[in-house]
Image (cartoon, rainbow, N blue to C red; front, side, top):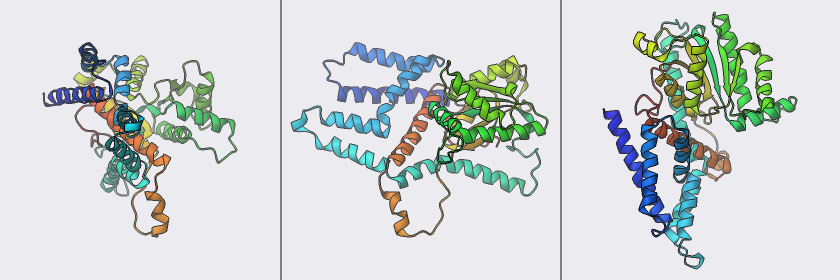
Length: 365
């Protein structure tokens, strides 16, 4: 009941915030009550119709002003609403401050380190429990011998980079974020097979349904590193974790690896096969909790850490670039805010088990 009340209050807050932004940007004579009612109905539909994909697109559009770049654009538009010759200074100053703070590497790393630190802390806690020998019955310790699927999360940009790497395999200067995840998944696949499991490797690279080249690239990288071609599945859900969880659940049910959800909920899931997630650390908590919400047991294998543990030392001159604005820092800050807003959206839609955007101790690693 408390979780439901929290969702209702958050939806009301989102509606008021959107209404305030629209009334400040759009002249009131154009913003009729009819349009406002339609907007609020769409927000309510997002709560009562959680499987409607159209509402998800609307949410991404409405949340754009809450990102650093979106907020700066809205404020600059507000400053110019009175004409070029009468620009309002306060919105311009706020927009400049948002862009400046968001593009400083030190502040970007501080924001992202919070999300990634929880993952590192979880690994450290497990290491302290295990010591030199780690038996499989320690709570929270993942057993790859129970793996039914290895899910690699990626987006369309990842697959385009992977194609570039495949076309130029000898060029070490080419970097890809998806390829290391695929190699890591292949390693986990071989380890799981050595422990008696027969997992399927599911890659969600956001490729176009008709993009056979993209699927061939993914299959080639995995098969060359020991993954059987019959165990490779390529999906087009990308970083849409909710859709991925539903597709993986259906795939395993069709293969009769897991029982239907109603049966799993009634009989318990402690001994069910595991889903191994390979995804960036910044989204791992939301991804794992989304799968757990579907009553699927998860072993989290985070990758793509954007920040390193803070260490002392280093001259002032070498640390100077950390306070100079950069495009990479702005991109990292935007990635953090997008993940935060997406986690909020997942909670409002009821796709997360509770109001917890951080690491959960029930997630196996």
